Length: 90
Ligand SMILES: [Zn+2]
Image (cartoon, rainbow, N blue to C red; front, side):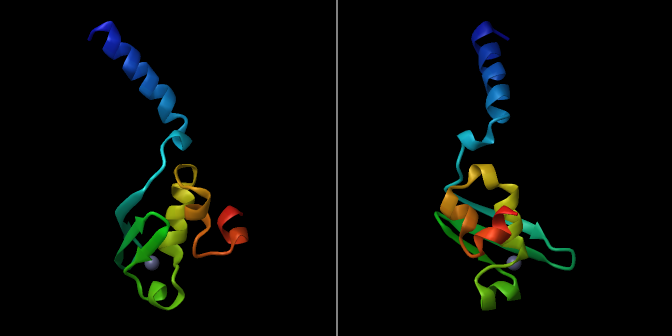
């Protein structure tokens, strides 16, 4: 491996410890909810889930879990949309 590529690998290693350098614009995941799998998607600041709770409440445990998992890689609005700030940040 040449020295240029080695330096890029080292830089990638440092970057990987600073996840807030990268921000999601959109994603789609299959979420294992224990009994069923649900599809959680995000486009800009809009989250959606295929579970029944989401249909009624516009948010759900799967969305809130993804907001926690990806917290450093989401914008302030993406982190808090759909749920009270106190629930998202605590
Ligand atoms: Zn859900």
